[in-house]
Image (cartoon, rainbow, N blue to C red; front, side):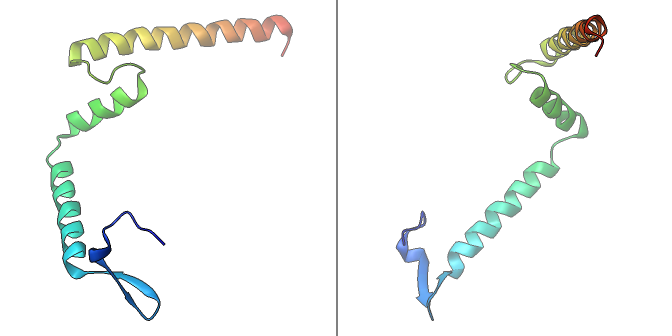
Length: 93
């Protein structure tokens, strides 16, 4: 059985693979560092990231462009909803 970790970080004991404590400590430290990085993000930055996930093609935009793209995307979605409502009423669905 191969693992993505190096074989020196794993050892067998009674048929079970265990990680050495130094690897676990490194993993814990990295998760703690990630948690600290997440806490340093302001609520506004968190909301902007969520908005970037929703709007297609907005990964590397500045805030002004993001808001303009969001407004046009909302208009597009409203147009699609209006079209689908008219289409469904035409066909009596």
